[in-house]
Image 1 (spheres, helix red, strand yellow):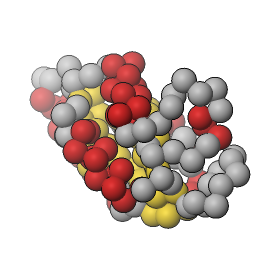
Image 2: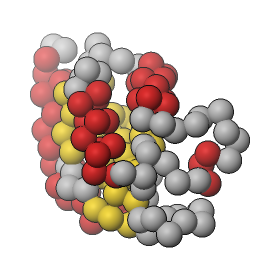
Image 3: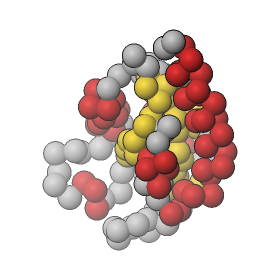
Image 4: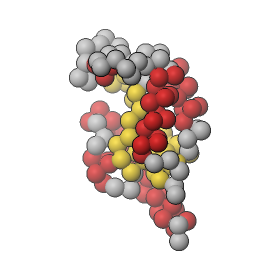
Length: 138
C-alpha cells in the first residue's frame, strides 16, 4: 500500500550541499515532491547559522515508522549525532520530520509558521496525488 506523507527538512550546516545529498537519498524511499527551499532563523535554539528549510511530499510504500527510521539514518549519514540528548538544540547537517499523511488537514496544521508561505506550492499537488492513490486502490 502506498502512502503520501507531508514532511519537513532543514539544515544549517552546509545546507545546500546536505539538501542535495538528502534529496538523492530520499529518491530511494519513494517519489518526492518539494516546495521551494527558504532560509529561516533558528527556532528554539541558540545559533548564528540560518536554516535552509522546505516541505516535501513523499509517495512511499513505507509505514510512518519505517520512513522515520530511514530519515534518521539519512540524518546520521550526513553527520547528525542523534545519540546526543541535546541534538535538537544544536546546529545540524539535516533534520527530516514527518508531519503526517498529506490527505489529512491535521498534517497541514502541523506545518511550522516559518514554512506556511510554501504550503500553497504543495497543497494542490497533495490533493491530486491523494486522489490518484485512492483511485489506484479501486
